[in-house]
Length: 582
Image 1 (spheres, rainbow, N blue to C red):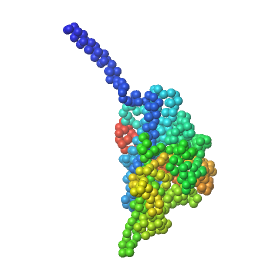
Image 2 (cartoon, helix red, strand yellow):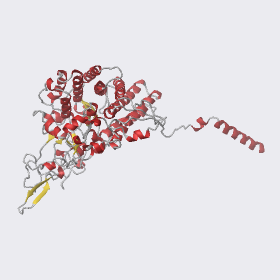
Image 3 (tube, rainbow, N blue to C red):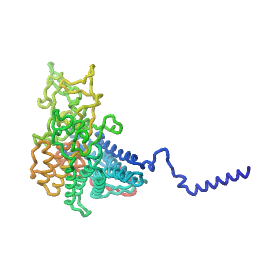
Image 4 (cartoon, rainbow, N blue to C red):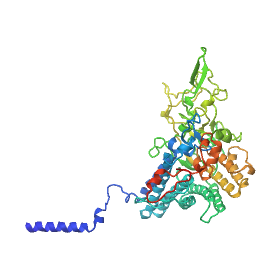
């Protein structure tokens, strides 16, 4: 018995010694019943789930609330915060001096959002080589990851200039990032988008909402334009880049399955409207459901569907707070009585909106009225007046604006032109207001009443349309050939002719005219701030056309500040701040 006990002790000591000599193997975890970073990227389905996260985050980024996304629209020549009533009480980017600073949470939000896309893309790209996927499956995954990374680097360079470039998966703590130049950042975006273009399927071979070869070519058009404006230290000329931009644009424009929609189409083609309003009707955004050959990429939103719970509140924040608009009259006792001009939110006015952001007077009253025949300013696309529906008001049934019932003090937030492209034609059943018999309630003017929580869009939303490709092509010609380019005018006129506009003459075409045309065609679709920043015109256009933001914007605001948090935590190297910011 004593010998057996002695043998067990010796055996145990030998085993312990053997283990202690190979600590790495002993400590290495072999996960078999839960997911880890090592076993989560193996099959094609694994990688599809990772790519789906990129789409989900991309969609949530574009559909965030006002405090996050809308700085990319307002504080520009296009729009301003509608909360201000006097110059002594300015809010948000109506007050650049005190808002656009390195500690502003929005500068950090956008920085981290784009880098999250980059980080996830890097992980996907780094792990495809050790997966169980076929070569074809690897190409499909890598093409999508390259597109998202190229998109993120382009947007970072637009807003911040040169940024740290990361193309490998980060597996350890790193605190020594340095900024590359703006040109180098655009070149990284270019390389990623070229790789995506070579790997992605054509647009008629991918599902709605998926990135495609033509989308990558569209993005390359912008990136080549951006590179053309850089003062190159790397040996390439601006004209070489503009030539490439035009070639990429033509590749998209001439693809057989692409084309501007020039005739009425979709489920509402027999209703009142025009072809521009058809573009934004429910069910008309996706290519597969309506034959819309203009869509390059649309955010997919299916009400109450798993995986698309992010809702878009463009209408809530961007259209006027008409339900809080009061009109006044003097009763027979000589008393001034104020009542609501509009008794309830309705589908015809886009549901419940709160007037957080409004277009500039330049946008509403000059850009959109440039041509009296322009259908983009028709009543089907911009609601500029409405009949008062409160039967208690002596002016019931009269036009609010045309009949003189609107006070100037109400035009900042409570009434300004309503953009119909931002809301849904119909809403889910539970958002209507019903009477005791189960019928939808209507106002005295026959509009369908909705409940107060009806404040979002229930349809798919464009991110990129073919109309922008034509305008990017025009931009390349203007930059390459100078003002008055006939080639630029020809590209612009393709878009204008669809909207029943007269042709612009070559002699009238310059970069400012192009920016006006982009505003007419793409308002609330394009991200206006990155556009103006990449062209170096955020300061000049905002100063000239925005009556509130123009009071405090400075030339250094053509670039956003690098977030203070990023500079502070980078303790082993220096990330230089952009000039002008403390």
